[in-house]
Figure 1 (cartoon, helix red, strand yellow):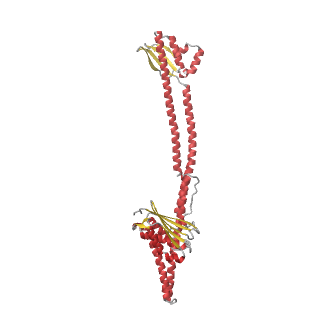
Figure 2 (cartoon, one colour; figure 1 turned 45 degrees about the horizontal axis):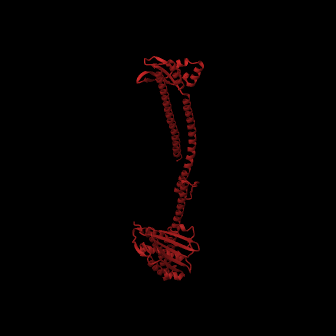
Figure 3 (cartoon, helix red, strand yellow; figure 1 turned 45 degrees about the vertical axis):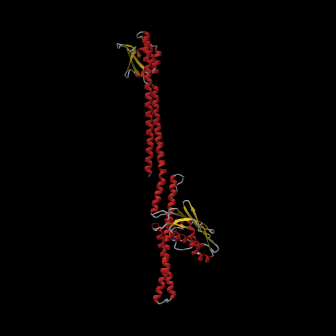
Length: 449
């Protein structure tokens, strides 16, 4: 991962340096074109002046040609003028020779004529007057030291900047590659450790960027896996305990009867029957759970009057509630409807009411309420019991999870499976010593398998 990041960053750095070189080439090319255009303009000025001089003088004047040659030299042009017969009328070297020595030195130094030393090709420009050729102007462009200095400085500046930027880009690429790859490598190592069974592995990625968010998500996943693994171990232990206890009792009693140590009377048979019933209850609870998981395939959904179902359930639990000194209250209007399988919904509410009765002390109240909404129906089961601890709330819907009150730990798992089968949701809010609220939301149209 580090090498990949480094290669990508180095490629981007190289691309940036290449772009600067390309930009330099474009700038120099345009600059050369501009210089060439200026030179052509200067030539056109000299051509126009020579044609004007010829018109005024009614022919070629060596004196005026000298002036034009000197002027052209100041414009950076080495010139030579020929008449229509090809005879040289004037050239730069002869024009310079006609000047004072001091003027010659100054003009040669300023124009770069001495550096040219007679090298380079002449370009021919015909001279016309009234449509007739009157001669030719031969031009050779003198080197412009200012332009050469500009291009040289540009090349040096580009070379130094490219070198400096290249070094800085390489250093930054190495640093950034390490910084970017380190969290990913750390997460990869942690994931490998988790795959080998070390569920306590966590990663610490500071900051608030996407990598930090990834680290937090990874830690949340690892925590969930750790909790699930702990629950699986508890499931095996709970199930083994629930099955072992009645089996051990039954085996001990039967061996005692066979050995003649224990009498085979009616009380002994009743005890064996109770333990058998306990095993039957465990197996039935497991069957209910697996049936709840598959219930989405066998839902028989109807529009049900919620108040009628609440009244029937309150009547069913009336005797148990009266015995515990608990009041079951119904709060729902007569028109509230819910789309659900009546048997499955009844199973959900029976589980919740049964649990509420277990934890509600005498004088407490269990409230069943329903409310119609635009998106479906909301059912709440509220008790004034002892409440659920904060650490237990995320786990109460897990299969075989048992709280302080014992039990096989399948009741609320079955409730959640049945609610999920309808496409609904169930939430719980609780406060120790105050009570618990289970809120179920059923959609207007349950999902279909």
